[in-house]
Image (tube, rainbow, N blue to C red; front, side, top):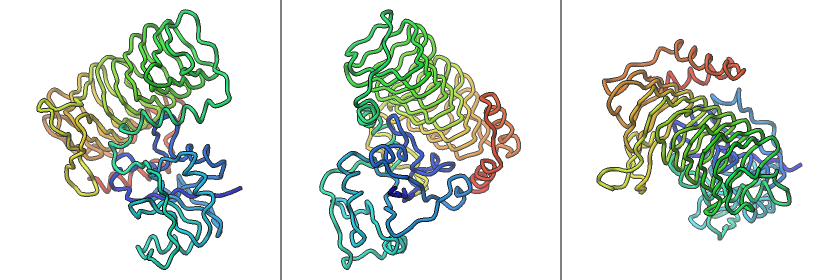
Amino acid sequence: MQQIILIDRYREHLLPIVFTKPIAEIRVGIMTIKEKWEKYTNAKVDILSADYLKNKFPTPETDQDTIWIDARILPNSNLARTVLNIDKKQLLIDTNGDFVALRNKEFLNMLHNNELDSGINHVIYQDEIELIKKTWDIFTHNGNEIKKDFLLLTNGRDSAKIPDYVYATKVENIFLEPGVKLSPCSLDAEDGPIYLGKNSEILDFATIKGPFAILEHSQIKIGAKIYGNSTIGPQCKVGGEINNVVFQSYSNKAHDGFIGNAYIGEWCNIGADSNNSNLKNTYEKVKMWNYAINAYENTGLQFAGLVMGDHTKLAINTMLNTGTVIGCSCNIFGAGFPRTFIPSFRWGGAGGFRVYDFDKAISTASNMMNRRDKKLSETDIEILKYVFEKET
């Protein structure tokens, strides 16, 4: 079987999301980037990431036939075919001259040393390549990726039956995996597909507009308003109102409140009536914190709400301003708007922050995971300790 390695590149631009995971594990659309490459290529896909993540995400032995790909790239069928057909003397680049893929371990060393030159046979991929360069690219690309993933996952398959008591439009754009539970609700697929994963549940009077995906064992609460371009990853509970939001997995926003144009990491909890702004009162483009430049960066977007790292918790009635970035393992509470960049392991709110005691943060993370019959491993703790030492 062909082996593919997805390489983390420029990962600082994707912090705080990738503090705890490789780029290829980011969910965009229905699947993670790694899962997309597996589906498109039928290859064995592995990961090369930061050294401190290797105990959790090890890189196996490779050979001269291994294909190395920039992990930020969102694949499609044509790109996947092209990548599989490159030879050992070729370097695949995009129309801007940026690295896409290679099949030569010697070239990989040259790539790391920025020594790729004109002596190598450069092959230009002429079509546009979509990739996740910045954190906000995740929710920006999410709607289109749902559409692509929907076709990939449902082609040639039959959906489970939609009950008669469900209001559904354009039913050919709706796919139910086995075990889906539907109460009387609204599924509007006029603007894009709706994918309901195995054993997911939609409770009474929820309204869902496509493009939308919910993954296995997740639940939409009673009366929820779910706008398009949104993904609910595995084992999440979501209520209230969301618009263009990606929940990675194992996170909860079970009550009323609005979250929009956002990415929510794993093991997060958003308390009742918490809200984020996704549009400035001045209608100016939104700036968000970029770890790579240690400063705010203009996103070029009019709508940009929130990026939240893993294990972060928001208390009830938390208010977040437009373009807020919150790191890992934060605990946010109190009245007023906190600042729009909150590093990892912070405890507080608008009145100020202090460093979150590491042992208490680990205890909170462990308690939440235990409720889902999951265990915070020693490897997970080591990763969080690395983040703590880097961010405090």
